[in-house]
Image 1 (cartoon, rainbow, N blue to C red):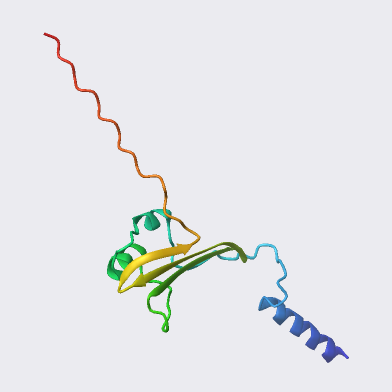
Image 2 (cartoon, rainbow, N blue to C red; image 1 turned 90 degrees about the horizontal axis):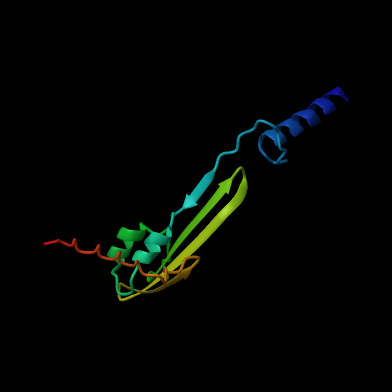
Length: 128
């Protein structure tokens, strides 16, 4: 009977260490985990239809997924987990035809506002 009790306690403690029970032990630190490609709005705003794959790769980086059966489609994914809980997940898909960017879609859209130029400062007046 004593061996059975020890065996049960040993199995429970090993299971708790492996995270199988997901007990929230106080003082246990869980690291933040970022996976995939970080994509920013500035990167998306630089994309223009007609860009070559090389130009897109320079802006966006190497895609996480290039489908073997559909090489004219690139997928960029990014996920962030903090303390074991999913915080954010983003996805962008780029489509090419004849090695030129034709369209893209996903969680980002190009900014519709174009940067406005600062007004010219008034010319200095001279008094005679």
